[in-house]
Amino acid sequence: MNNAHFGETGAKGYRTAMAATGTRTPIRILTVDDHAMLREGIAAVIEGQPDMQVVGEASNGVEAIERFAELKPDVTLMDLQMPEMNGIDALRAIRAKHPDARVIVLTTYKGDAQALAALKGGAAGYLLKTAMRRELLDTIRSVHAGRRHVTAEVASEVALHAAEEALSEREIGVLTAVAAGKSNKEVARELSVSEDTVKGHLKIIFTKLGVADRTHAVLLAMRRGIIAP
Image (cartoon, rainbow, N blue to C red):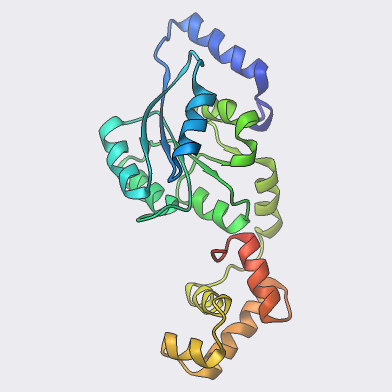
């Protein structure tokens, strides 16, 4: 079954299957987001679902690791941008100790770079917060059942750039410094390299991103989630 079209029929089918097998234990969910209102919103969406239960919350990646170890949830909903530790680092840490952990990234970032990093880190799902109300419940059920789910909009972005060569860590560092408004000389000083080396990195960056100048490189990298906005 296509995860993106699990729908109400799938939800009813899930509950029917639970009843048929005598399974009554709800899916235990941990929510991780630095905004209390978002956590409350998720709880409101899940409230009343007979097959789900929010068992804990965390407001950053460090707390997420601690709460996961304590609660052993069936599914974790993980934000990406959080203080102290971001969602991808928390995801990797959790999966390193608990390889069977099922984590759904719930984020505002639809760029392919963030999504690809999350999926490579072991995320079983990638859902945009704008799609939360219509997709969240079915995504949780699907991931709990052992399937993967990526919002269609994000999946198309990942597929579009799949064959492209990714920027190296050094190239990302150069572009991040450029995005902060630093000149080539300032970037060179910050990275302890020559100005010619910085210019060489920028040429490679422009080629990989398919742009002609610094401004377009920064804007595109932000849109794709290669560097933080």
